[in-house]
Amino acid sequence: MSSGIRTFDGAVALITGGASGIGRAFGVELARRGAEVVLTDLQAELAEEAAAAIVKSGGRASSAPLDVRDRQAVDAVVRQTVQRAGRLDYVFANAGTGVFGEAHLLEERDWDLTIDVNLHGVVNTVRAAYPQLVAQGFGHLVNVASLAGLVPSPFLVPYAMTKHAVVGLSKTLRIEAARFGVRVSAICPGAIRTPILTGNVLGRSVYSAMTPERMLEWWRRLGPIMDVEPFAKQAIDAVAKNEGIVVLPRRNRALLALLAWMPASAAEKVAAKMYRDTLRDFPEIARGP
Picture 1 (spheres, helix red, strand yellow):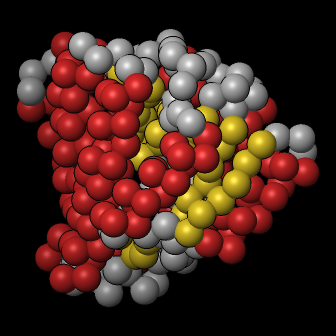
Picture 2: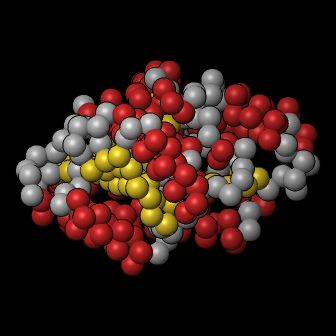
């Protein structure tokens, strides 16, 4: 096995949730930079189509069906990738889901699915891949969290909870991993133009009157929505620099820096105002399901 991580030409990158959205954009960008990408997803047919599109454009890609909630399945995909390629340079724990709604309206399935995919899915990926990276003496584990993992996020309570956990996991594991030549980063996107914003197989809203157009309007209240292609490029650039916490769009970094200099209650006040404004301006939310 060749020693040393490759950035990115000749690297092998495994991506969970690689069929669409951020995961697919990561695959396209990594392949463009010369990496071989393995796109895994519960949406197996869509992942296969994404891999085929990369190959057609001249890149190297394959796909595999994967439910990140299935620990043994995650173990198998990691093992098979290493056996075939002889190495594993990058692992993007990207698969995620979410539900939009106030916590008192959530069903048991909303809590369970969000925790199982966003937290247990990341843990399963880390548990399968990290020992391999340690054993080979190089590699980069990239966990996709969220801006909601750094600040209070009304209407996204289970999602924010799991993303805070992913940030904590990544920041702490990064310290241990450095001793073995392994890198760990957490990517914290704000609003990125992907299907999860409007709710589909990747998530849902508890408010039946909230149309996809109104959901996008709500997201725009939080700031400009970043297109997924430039997001992927900037995120991969940050991974190449081994940044520990990657916040995009960049304007969110200024917001976080400002909040860091303010009293601890400042972030709570900002979030509380956003919550009140939403209830005032979106009657379909104020009315409930």
